[in-house]
Length: 323
Ligand code: AVJ
Image 1 (cartoon, rainbow, N blue to C red):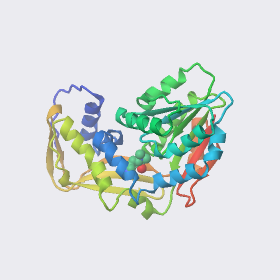
Image 2 (image 1 turned 180 degrees about the vertical axis):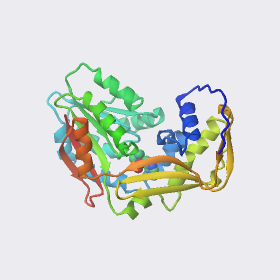
Image 3 (image 1 turned 120 degrees about the horizontal axis):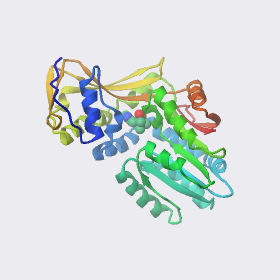
Image 4 (image 1 turned 45 degrees about the vertical axis):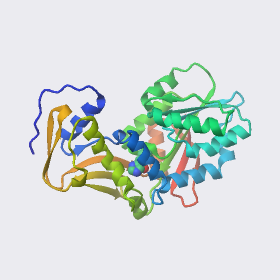
């Protein structure tokens, strides 16, 4: 395995991370790079797939327990509802509707890395609920938490992270993420977070290997993105989408596997990468949980589970944490 390297200069974090991941052994690309415009669209499609049960299950939870959740969030002085990774807000909408209709005072503060997604969300929600008090913010979780920590008001803040987005982090980083959130919480603040649960391994695997090949396209889209933005020549047909699930650890891992010996040029990085036949690129983890794992993560981060909500199939759980 030879890799031609020259003196490197990087214009962006994307360039630096792609370089590091593709010159490492084993090779990897972070799943955070999935979400360009095409990636956003493919993920929207994934959420509508029959095999991708996560979205429907969490929707059921929010739809079934709306009043109880709204009650938990409410505060005499009103509250700020900060949603990290709001996306298209389909699931949050049931809750927002209830809050608006019951004239419960709150400000909705959706945050997303994609300005594109935020614009769509704002348009859609203000159309549906003209009286909704809403402030959008574009940024990474990290930037947003920093702002949240700096806030001066004593108003109750509810931080919401839906969709089992935390599953993209390994346990160490998940604990770091939860600790970062905890540091920004006051005593009456809450964290409402979705965790996809361990279940029949076939159900999980099918969710990441749908029959229409949308997840395959989503996984391979990162190669397309590299082709476009780094002037590279990945042949998407020479890589195989390969999700795996380990029921012991609860970790779903997705790979792109090279189907032959091949070389790929990334001209913008002045880099040529060699692949042996059946060599892999690790692209994503989607961790599955149970109450024990979540309790442990919470404890490590200095948080406590106060209430939890589950769908009728016990596929998905939303936990409410306090400090
Ligand atoms: C958005 C991280 C929750 O891991 O289930 C969907 C992304 N990847 N299909 C997940 C995803 C493949 C998704 N999260």
